[in-house]
Each structure stands twice: as structure tokens, then as C-alpha cells.
Image 1 (tube, helix red, strand yellow):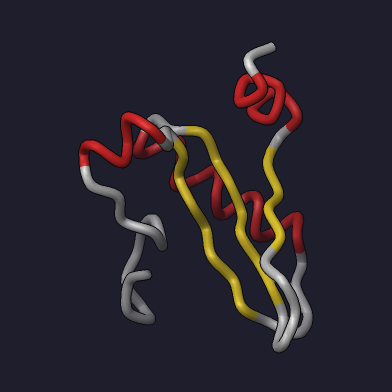
Image 2: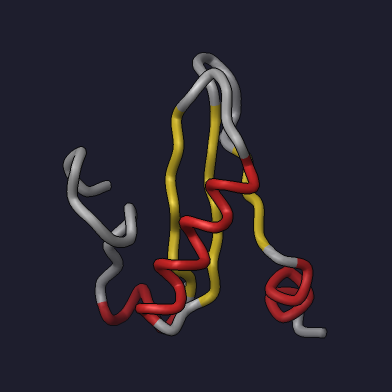
Length: 79
């Protein structure tokens, strides 16, 4: 993840990782989250990078969750 205050994608991937994971990741670790604002932020980053938007989020002592648009999920499944 990038340091606080740095603009752009939160998860910086190597060129090889981009081949495997063509996604733009927005990462959040908060007790309360507005998923719509988070997805909009992920979409803005994805428009700049050209990769699919993904939000990864969790709260304290909880597992990570992933949110993406349905077309990206179906693409990931190969459909």
C-alpha cells in the first residue's frame, strides 16, 4: 500500500503481477465504510490505469472482503 496522502492506486503491482491481476485496487481498513464512495474512488483510479476497479476492505479483527462490478466478476470467471 502507498503511504497516506499519496494519490492513485493503493496496491502497486509489478508488470508481471499486472499480467496475472489486471485490476486497480482501492484498499480500506475502517470500522464504517461507504462502499459506493469507495467504488467510485476505485473507478477513478481504474480509468487512469486502464485496469478493472476493485475495492478491498475490512474492519478490525474481520476478514478482508472484495467488491467489484458484476461485469468484472463475470470476466474474472471467464464468462
